[in-house]
Image (cartoon, rainbow, N blue to C red; front, side, top):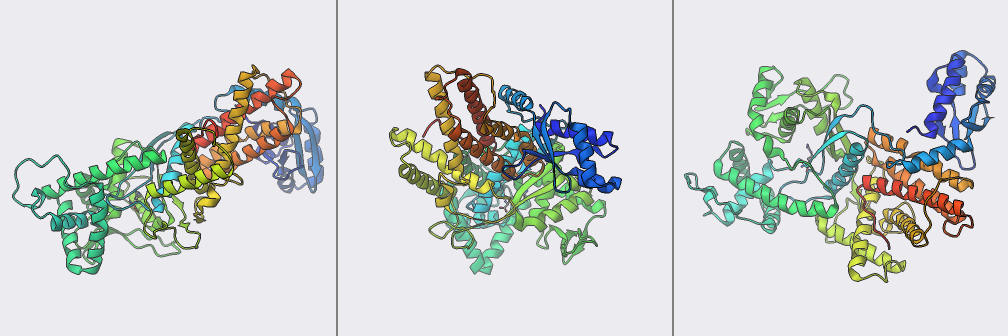
Amino acid sequence: MQSIRDQLSGEVGDVFVSLSLPKELGSVTRSSRAGQAPFQCNGAMAAAKLAKKNPRELAVQIVEGLKSSPLIKSIEIAGPGFLNIVPADNLVKCQAAELAKDQRTGANIVTAPKKIVIDFGGPNVAKPMHVGHLRSSVIGDSLQRLLRFAGHEVISDIHLGDWGLQMGQLITQLQLEQPDLVYFSSDFDGQWPKQPPVDIDDLSRMYPLASAACKADETRMQQARKATAELQAGRAGYRVLLDHFIAVSIAALKVDFAALGVHFDLWKGEAAVDPLIAPMIESFKQGGYTEISDGALIIRVAKETDKKELPPLILVSSAGAALYATTDLATIIDRKDNIAPDIILYVVDLGQSSHFEQVFRAAGKTKIFDETALEHIKFGTVNGTDGKRFRTRSGGVMRLSDLLQQANDAATKRLSEAGLAQEFDAIERSEIARLIGLAAIKFADLRNQRTTNYVFDIQRFTAFEGKTGPYLLYACVRMKSILRKAQSAGISVGEIKPSAKEESALVLMLDEFDQALHAACGRRSPHILCEHLFDLAQAFSKFYASCPVLAAKDIAVQSSRLQLVETTLRQLQTGLDLLGIETPQRM
Ligand code: ARG
């Protein structure tokens, strides 16, 4: 369906055309200022410049052309030629009916769907997740939901970090602790054990030990490097160990991501593309794309126009190891062969900008993928209330489960302060707290323009007032409660007949969903949707404060307003779902 904004743009655009002016200049937008007409067109000034006419006179001509339009109730010229437009009552009423009827409350499907791979999450095997992985997961998950809802075909991939030095570090640590394991004997030719020799607690304990030891002791580091190189060269026992480490990590990560409500289609990792690396390097050499520099095999990616110098991409280190960029390039080949996407999005922190610039340029240069179809979806860092990089209370790296627990505790406290959910049984109350905690964390992250840094402040995030997840959940719950009461009172929904200005304002806000959805998708920016949902909840509050629903005298008014509540709830819940936020039935 077409939004009022688009219908008005068409109407005004036609008048522009009839005056031999470009149609696009007739485009209509929502006015930002309260108390003003809801729509405006600012194209008269630019058009006047083009046609070398007086803007005010031209505006008068445009208004003349729109006089008999059935879509417009009134149109006024302000200042040098701004056009303020009030849509016809009937247009608002018809639009309300369409929005109520449409399951998607006005959200259109793209006309040219793309196949899109989203690479996000990116935790590393054995290494604890940090807040960068959390941001990537929350933003990436919202993007996969948004793009899918918009009609694209989306394949998400967690892209585990399972091929780097940390693997060699773990292997040598394990050898130190259990030297007799069969994986370490070079002439073992029996059946490899099915059971992993470690569990997730072992891995979490061993990795920090190994990493610290390697930092402190060059011999340990050499051993870890050697093990990494042997693993990458295909040493059988190490490969089996790696598979164990990966399986153990994935099992634990699946629990974490399920708690977060984040889903991945693919659980592939860097190690999965190992077989592609040798042939890839060979073909890059053949193509003349590589050079040897200081013993390493590199691809030069700098451009003359670069403002900052971009170092070459290292394909093979001087020690003979494949590096992070090497596996990223091989992964592009893997995705091209198995998925054939139009676009690949990488939801990874800003700090890796140069890495992705190198990889994208190298992919373009070696012709494995169109450089412009590879996008780094960057995001900023999370700081603590002390202004430093966010850490947990104990000062260590964050564990997802601890963070969720912290959110849960804060949400529980908020509920009791607000006197909400207190009469429910303990199970329901804790489920509500869990949903509030998750909504608090996710919304606080997504509401910011993703490239900005933000401060992690669980007290602020869990507040029921302000631009927060809990505020939106509360708005949903209020609407659900109205619908429940209406049902038991036998009141049903009917045709929406907006009469109060708060009712029309709510309809016009509902009508903005399509625009917000597609802007959020196009700019890969969930915060645009957050903004819309917050505005919608506020428009609902204003409506509810001045337009009684169940207490309205007239039955037609009751069912009209009830339909408005139902439609608003449907859109708010759809929108929250696109942010990965689940809503409780009541609180
Ligand atoms: N494992 C990486 C890290 O922890 C993130 C992976 C991002 N994705 C990618 N294709 N490089 O930094």
